[in-house]
Length: 393
Image 1 (cartoon, helix red, strand yellow):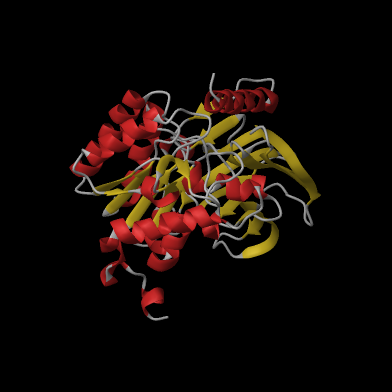
Image 2 (cartoon, rainbow, N blue to C red; image 1 turned 90 degrees about the horizontal axis):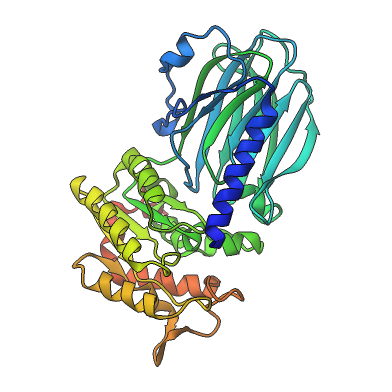
């Protein structure tokens, strides 16, 4: 069993234990009841919610896992009972909310949800009051919030807890599905959505730990050193959706969520930065990469592939097979392999470019990768693709 498979089992078991702990009664699950809204435009839109005066023992989820670098979730509720126990967030980063306390959970080093801290609220959550609860995740931080609000969303009272990537890196992993759960008590669920802060993005980047910057994150190194972050600093963060998850590979699971997340913006260019975790089955990589390419072409989008790099725990043969296939496809690609390997030995990374794990790039390795993007995809840097803030700087 691979490390990725073990991680998936752990996450699924964690979700199961979470649900079992919710209530002795059977919990009602509404899969896909949480929608995505561009720029946070919310409307009452679910028949499931509209028909319910109050919600008890219920779990509402987004339709798939989401790994966008920058993502927010907000839930609007009216409390209908004297005692409540609510949860909101993602599988590996969420808060449990009680009448006078909040428990915030994060991923531990084994990729299981673990209590980060328990905090008293400066105000009591009272029956018949309106509340806005959720999180705001950014490249370098994540904030959880609880706000007592008026009908016009004017904030009366607020709890907010922010975690930085450098001080609490595992809090930012936040893998899995966005969800909202009523574990005890009753609420009127007025609205619930997720959103991302992008305005007419021109580029999307879907990838694995190289894109997420997992090794930078867990080693307390600023993720601004990722090649994707260097790219977004030029294009403008609002013009580039970055979506990476450690351990991600070309698979049916990825394709299913890719269809959903790609449909949000259908950017002109889409970089598919995957393959490093497919070395044990190159044919599987090809199968699902072709599916992703087909989805993009049918949308009139331009796919961009990345050559893959050597890793010390795998033979070099699959690296060569994947890279030869990419180069034969007559599709735009960025040669990351060329960027980081020795000229006289393509099986070895250049000195100073590889982390101690033998897989992931260091900040110097990432810099070389970004320079390869400049070389192999110059059209993305045309003036009409740059953010106005960059042009005016």
